[in-house]
Image 1 (cartoon, rainbow, N blue to C red):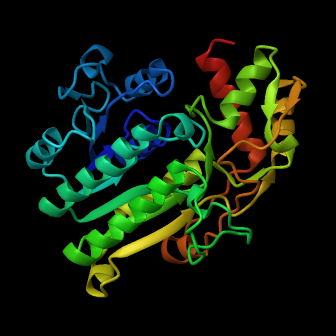
Image 2 (image 1 turned 45 degrees about the horizontal axis):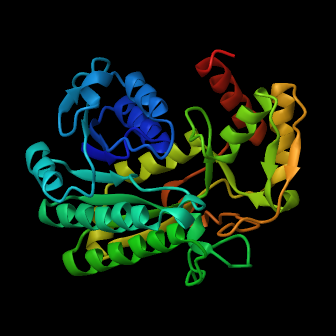
Length: 342
């Protein structure tokens, strides 16, 4: 298939594209390469995909991959661009869209709310409109475990009430789900929303716990441990996430269309909750460094525990995350040291 992946220079986007290319799909990747975190990491990911960085810096310039010349091209483009995005859809004859572009981060949303509305609401509306007007077979898009907000019952199930978000980021993701539902209902557009839990692994985001902890420990700096370490997260290794995303992209949706099951939501996680202090201990073991811990109170917008019920994803896609925390952290540390020449 010919697949559009937005957020192509991002952590999950990069890995999804690699897997799609390996599975013989043609991929068009777009990303605005914003400066929310170090853009050199974004360019390095694109470089791994065979994209000329000098060309990739220019907006709306189609750049063919030197590594995968028949399979991948990259265009620096913003999903907020209401003029350029429809032109891309017209030109490329895209069949399936995987929308991973979004302004991420809970804490950042406390200080930069406009960015979240622009990217996650306006940008997502533009994606929906393009899908509606260009006969897209399936829209797969990133939601987030943050939509569960103040829910106390664990593990989190798709059927749980999600009307109590505690960050603007979570609010925009819940809005995406509602917008997708509307377009599925009105325009017979198959949409699948994926509530990602805490994803980690090689090429991960510098604002995520795994990266922050390892980086600080290697530099001899203290790590910030919020809620005095009384936190638990459903940490999910990137390869397990990608396997689920690609299975959903590749599945034939004909039966679903016939049965009018056009709108779907899934949790995608590890089906397990790990204590934050145990996670830190695993990093310490892999680095051979004892962390200096700065114990801090709970941060606004944070939740104490996440845990994904993935029964629906197992049933419908035979999804089976199988990377242990020990193996996943080991792979991240190995990449981190190699990338930074440590």
